[in-house]
Length: 559
Image 1 (cartoon, rainbow, N blue to C red):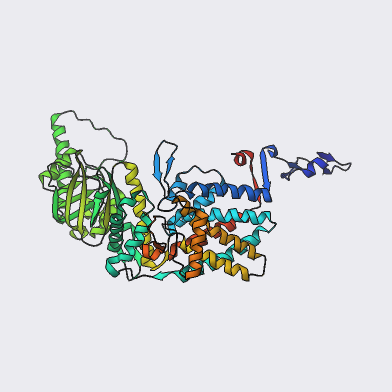
Image 2 (cartoon, one colour; image 1 turned 90 degrees about the vertical axis):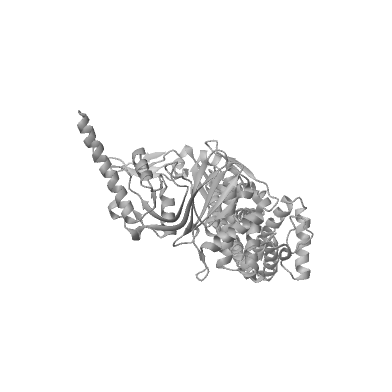
């Protein structure tokens, strides 16, 4: 493929010209030549083939979570590489645990994660929505419409849809009737989960937890102050809200008092033992006298540490590190209850809640650095004598803990995820008290609005907008199908009701209650969640549509 001319110049033959361009290099005489590295192992998809491959990969991901939508949605069991099993129907968790290799499919996993981080709910809906948009865009590409024109039309349709969703929203008074609106929104979020049988109880716990730590003036909620702790054993109904902090530890000595009233806590990150040299050391003890001296020296350190704690006025010691039996015995003798091996995150939370300071050295311990709590008590669970510490009536902050109980670890983990979704739903309503209907009513109303706008569009974007409207219908159809109803027939009936009555709150009656009015059923969610779903799905679809060439190793495409 390389030809050298009469004057020493190098030219490429016809075979080389047809090959993909590689890396240009120069030999020792200054003659350029091209290195075609591992071209046999490369594979390239371009044009329509690239679009089809990308869209089909993303659609496969969307189809995998479609059946988990709605109150009658099915759960998924994901078995990890180590054999750990997760049973859930939370879209973000399913996609996070799945082993996804295709790069475009990973975009949908990230889409679900971004919805989870920003809103906390609607993670399944946003992926199903993106999958539906990609499916419609493939039909439009095959008609000969340029992918960028499709993306432009989708963006126009998205703005119309978001505007329509905001128009049909209702502003609720979040504190009226004992926070009824917040409880209904949390119940809607919990309705599709494993814990739906106890959704009213968990919704109340969720609302109480968020309101306990939120700042209503700033409309802000600090989720760091809501700790969700799980304990296997007991029933789901035993889940409770504790106005304080739960630490999965017990007092270091079995004879220490099981509760401390008006606790003044010394929060320590220094070990309760004599200092050790940093370098390697060896100590030879040859006589009993030397051993006594060493023992006395060690005791002196312990006594000094306990004296500093007592002088500060502390009556409870919480230590990040462990301490041996000698220190434990001395603490017990001096009537100082102690807790050891408390994690760094829990230690920070205790310090924030009780107004204490984390002290790195005993010499720095003073009365103003102590954390204050009304009551610290140890509780025992079941017959296995599993203990936990509960710190209540904290001095500074309103930190709360939700203690989740369940029959096995999978139920406890899923209940924790469900409570996170419900907490996020309540927080979104505190930030923006507008609600939109569930049951696919918002999507159908938006679909009708986009169709009406498409008929007035004079450019080729009209086709893209109609495709967007058609994609919006996938959500109510999926809800209806998962509930055992005829998807297309149910959606056609509800669209007709919305058009004739002018009430956009008619949605799929998944639970067969007899009414399709979502306001009457109290099925609604935050307006911010629905707007975010539409916008995020449209942005990811636009990104995927702009890719028309995929260069990769053949293994990656074939796999």
